[in-house]
Length: 206
Image (cartoon, rainbow, N blue to C red):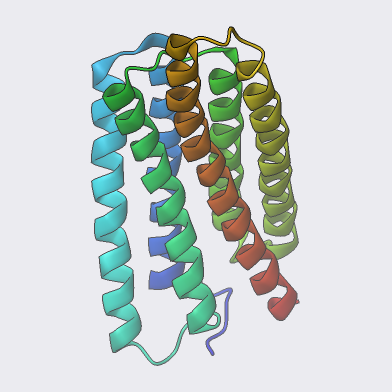
């Protein structure tokens, strides 16, 4: 295992940071989309998802070619996977909204806002991981806290759906809306998993 702290940024640290940057861009665009419904923001999320996939392909290729890594290969692989998964769920949230013809409500806006904040924290964690691991750990904990907030909002949102009228139209709307909520909840879950890996990495480093 390699040593962190050299002047030149390690390629794996760089690729993970770039994944986190693309995730942040996509999460911000998703937040704007649920507020305004601008198709341009949907396109940004789609483009970000494709860029994230490509960065992950490059990272895996580098893992196959490189013996010395800045921290455990398994941790690099998992962190890349979870960052990519968050972005995937940001993209499928938009796909489901469009496919199921769902307009954002206050719960969806708040849940997506917390996912965006988690993405911000994950990027800050990756920017600090090499030189200030304990600061990175603090940001990872903040990302985990956002996941807890999303889960509370998810439960409140589903409970609110069940308070509606007991007619077929509302039941169908309820089922479609809950499906969209689920994608946002999954995005938060994967952000939590990414934060867990960062915590594990910091524990091994310090």
